[in-house]
Amino acid sequence: MSSEEELLLRKMMLEIARKRASPAPSPCPRGPLHVDRSSFERLLKECKVVLADFWAEWCGPCKMVEPIVEELAQRFAGKVAVTKVNVDENSDLAFEYGVMSIPTIIVFSKGKEFKRFVGYYPGLARELARTLESLSA
Image (cartoon, rainbow, N blue to C red; front, side, top):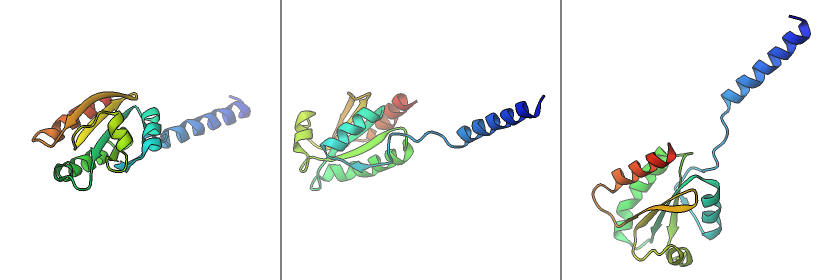
């Protein structure tokens, strides 16, 4: 092997090693993110899976759902965009998605509603995790 070929081979090997060492950044930011219309619509376009928690500060069941949403945000960081939509501040989004009671959690896949969860109930965390696992695999 000539020295030119050897140099070229080394450069190629270094480039391959660099690509493996630094994975591509995920378009889905770590959450949970408090969103408005524009940031929510951007995430629906950029991320394969989006979880939207429609909530309000004064809502007791919403406070019970909050730790579940936070745990899911950590567990699926980089794979799922976990968002929080305050219905008092974003009533237009709540109306657009037909949110009639809170908490309502909507899971979107490729920008379209996949599944909806309304209220707090035993087993909610497990159902949400299963849904997100099936979509983010």
